[in-house]
Length: 375
Image (cartoon, rainbow, N blue to C red; front, side):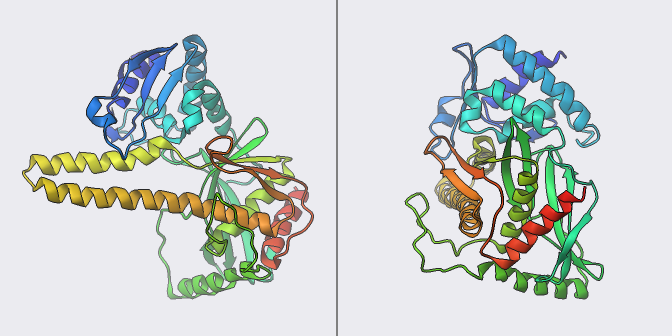
């Protein structure tokens, strides 16, 4: 089937119903308009589901949109070759999961969004694909290693920065920073632990505890009582992830070296959010079809939905607190706008590094900078 026929006649049509069949079923929900005419819309029952946010893909110039979509497809099929389950529809999966990471603004301006993801398929930083040492941390009493890995198609970005500390052949993995670069801006979509569980020996476990304890050095120099909160985020900045602060410090140091001075952190990805909600609804209908008590089912799924919303808020709030904590520690990191002040993103200005008021974060930032100078 022609790629554009596949996109318009299958993917967009199925996305309006929230389930796209690529042999693997993906929960992707959005409506579509083409040059002002709505060609696919969701049914009224779905629209009345309060837990769903239904964006509209607004294709304003179909010729321009088709051109950039095909450009993305040609580049993505080379990048993801061998990275998609052989049983899945390769072409359909590529064009479906593209929309997982679109923000509200991206759905309104999809040509720019696709161009952004075309750029993301290029290697964002000059890092090795295998771990290499950037230096020795006296505070952690360990070597720090970094690498840049290609990511599976279901992750937020095609590349991720992987960071770990190591001593005597044991390791502590820090959160992965998933990012891409477009138009001299860095887009950071996630800072999260690797989902792949690793076997741990007793020695490794002891090392984990040791590093975990030392990471709380990120609190040195932070005055809890200082009034540095604002109306957008009333929680104080003690609720942070020490390991995430370290990962972000490495990332920001790498970006500064690349002369990237603008960073964007998307805070709400509607397709990813809806995916979990749709899975609840599918399960709910299945149980209803089997004759389970409707009132009990509704109560159960109301609790699941509330829990999901709370988890999403916590994830967004924690990432924002981590960034604000770095802003407090470093004099070259400045949050220039919070979500829904200008758009749904957090925007950050990154100027030339001068100093940091925390010894551990300063050490890690400067180790990364020193390593870049030797390249």
